[in-house]
Amino acid sequence: MQQTVFFQAMIYLASAVIMVPVAKRFGLGSVLGYLVAGIAIGPAGLKFIGLEGQDIMHFAEFGVVMMLFVIGLELEPSRLWRMRKDIAGLGGLQVGVTSLVIAGGAMLFNVSWKESIALGMIVAMSSTAIVMQTLDEKGWLKTVAGQSSFAVLLFQDMAIIPMLTLFPLLAEHETNDAAHGAENSSLISAFPAWQQALIVLTAVITIIIVGKYLLRPVFRLMAKTGMREMFTATALLLVVGIAVLMTSIGLSPALGAFIAGVVLANSEYRHELESSIDPFKGLLLGLFFISVGSSIDFQLILLKPLLIFGLVAALMISKTVILLVLGRIFKVRMAQNLIFSFGLSQIGEFAFVLLSFSVQQGVFTREMSDIMMAVVAISMALTPLVVVLNEKLILPRFCAVQAGLEVQKPSDVEEQENPVIIAGYGHFGNTIGRFLRANNVEATVLDNDSDNVDFLRRMGLKVYYGDATRYELLDIAGANKAQMIIIAISDEEKRLELIETVKKHFPNLHILVRSTNRNDAYDLMNAGMMHIYRETFDTSLRLGVDALKLLGHRAHEATRSAKMFFVHDEKTLKHLSKIRNDDEYVTAVRQHIEELELLMQADREAINLPALAGWDRKDEGLERKPVKSVE
Image 1 (cartoon, rainbow, N blue to C red):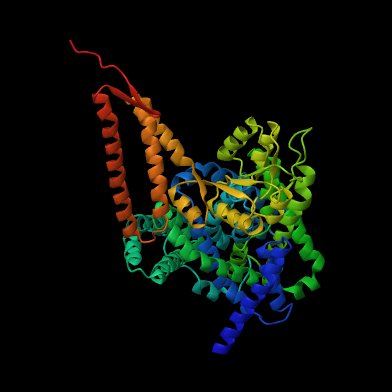
Image 2 (tube, rainbow, N blue to C red; image 1 turned 45 degrees about the vertical axis):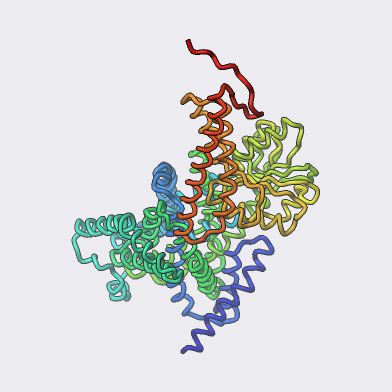
């Protein structure tokens, strides 16, 4: 048995290690690599895995749960509240309209109304795993398309709960799986509906209260052990526990994990939790995609190719059109709308759950479920190709911003020989670019937000759309001939990724990099950066100087004090960036604060002493002023 387990593990890992780099090399993304790996080792390929692949897929779905927990960690509740319009509006309309359109279309082909409604709800689902992974790889998560996609996917995850409740009411087939379905029913299914609702509400509130008040002391205790594996074990226990709780009451474990992540978004342990979960999330998601590829029933596809591929095309096109219309209603611009609509055009992984449940409840026949399983798997496998097709062919052809303006391409950079490259052109990069231009310094500007590029080009600025972390894009932008690159990207991880790319391929470039805050500056310093510009630091000092002036302090004293504070903070920053132990860090910070206060006090006394003798000190030196006599 052990040999079998190790052999299976070796097959899965080897297929991923071989196929994913190949897919990435051709710009197809890791998801397609995993899917092809699954097809290669599955029943349709080398036959290393058989029917057990579907069992592994159910286990690997836990990767989706972990992914939603990590996404929740990155979303503060206030930000989630700001997105309520997109979640309820765009997400709700997408699920509702898609369900009705698909149900109506199915009834035209003599499918019963109950089966049609169930089919509509299943097709309305999109793949959280594939879409979020693709958006992350492309650097689109924080764009309008990324935020809209996330809002729709989040609503879809929440919609699974009422769907599972509604499916038994749609049953019209006798099923031999009734006993099996009873075994898999939730612990609360025997209670009346109002009691079930109360139990569900209590479970959600419990997750929120435990996450907000009880988990921090637990994490603090684990952190004090100094054993990273204990912190990792605690994080895994948290996610697994939530999944068990939500499954036992008939809710989506992914939704429960997401709620827990949002509750912990403001926790000081957020980054440690994310780093602990991330390796497991990545491996399980990869395993999930491999299992999807291996579960595609090619024998059924060969028996009914026209039916299955016809259904895939019809359903994906229908979803894309619906999403395009909804994106237009919600005023998403064309380039972002195309990314959003094509990205969500597939049927998602939760469809496998809904299809299995529908057979158990007698909603679908086994034959119909098998056909839809194949359709779902193929639509997921085609998604990376659809995204690439959209990026390479459709966006360049149909996304002219306005009449008379250049066509907006996914990477429309022309050969450049400017001395400066600016990566990221939001509020920070825009200020730098305008300042350089005012001083007759031309810069090549790269930005990954097509809406921002559209707007800036309408203002007459030559900004190019593209992911600056890509080596080939930097090469075209003239990185070999430029003198410096200014990294003003807002995403901290992308900044570090770009730094590594520049250091590896363009060592000739001076790197000047934006830092969001002090902790970000530590990471950049440890990455070897010398020219770091903390956007909140300089502005905070300027505000502090103005505050001192308004309080009656002399202007030159306030400016001198700010300069001293700046020099001292830059010196302490280098020292603190090397400290990893929290207690040692707190002690060092307290020492530096006391040291700074003593320095500032000594400087104030040095300024005031000459003033007592009739001297007024300027930044340039001491200047004699007569002392008025007191009568």
